[in-house]
Image 1 (cartoon, helix red, strand yellow):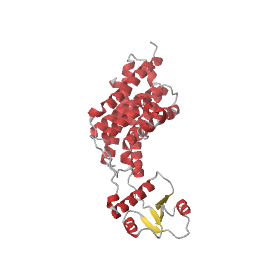
Image 2: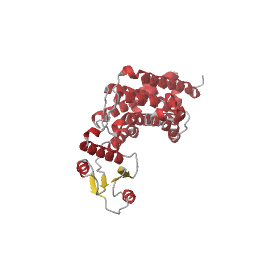
Image 3: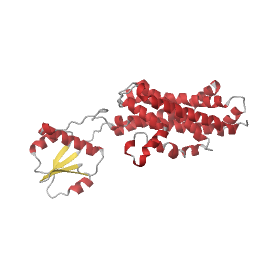
Amino acid sequence: MKGVIIRILRQMGNDRRTLALMIIAPIIILTLLYLLLGESSYIPKILVAKDFPAVLLTELKKQDVEVSFLDEGADADTLLKDKKADAIITTGADGMQIRMLESGNSKAALITTALKNASSAVSPPSSMNLTFIYGKIDSTEFNSLGFVLLGVLSFFFVFIISGISFVRERETGTLERLMATPIRRISVIGGYTVGFGILSAVQSALMILYSRYVLGMEFEGPVWLAVLIMVLLAFTAVSIGAFVSIFANNEFQVMQFIPLVVVPQMFFSGLITLDTLPYGLGNLARFMPIFYGCDGLEKVLIRGYGIGSIWRDLCMLLAFILFFFVLNVLALKKYRKL
């Protein structure tokens, strides 16, 4: 088994494209997501009616927004659709009316925050104080979704590399020649799994360290525990990639398994709150390794839990590794007549 591990590591080390896909690509994507989901420098444009309360207008101008008066007779919806304004505020018998183009985007959040702060300054007793048990109100989307991004990206890249590499071993005849020797099947699978797993573990550790110390991702729990979860998730992806390669005759067919193996798991990674899914679909997450990886990362990164609170996630990842390891050993029967 030692010889197989050394050969795999040397082979991967000489394959610069594979190394780039494993190490550099996740770092680049994490950086891009940090820029897209991090703090925004955008200044919202707000138009207010000329009878807007002067005191509130003064406080609103102190916020990070651009405030102008709405021209009489101007069509509010046209201004919003043409992006001449991000919000239009008018007053009437029913109180203040705020009109925006669409809900649920970052602009709406910035405008809402500015209005809340301005209202709080005018009338402090009516101010709202929103607090959370876990997380911060001013956390960026990158920090809030960091545990999902790390888990999904690691699993995705490791799955692709391991699946393609196993298919390549078959295409070149390396696996058949190896199985012609007296080496045991368990040693072959162990060698391949550990060999690819070492590189995957390095990738996982680099992603965690880069996110924490370069991108400044908020870590409430210990870094080493997050690395441990990522390493186990990476080994799980290696085992699943090897298993999927059994049903693929070439590298392109490995890619075809992505919508079946990777994409469904993304929906159960924490990207969507499982309790809100209808028909009890959230229970399907119990059969998906990404769920346990991201659940453990959330408990460590967001909630600051220790190993005593995530041992179930760690055990389930180990169980997935063992399960697919056994399946891969059994699958090698077709390469050797027993």
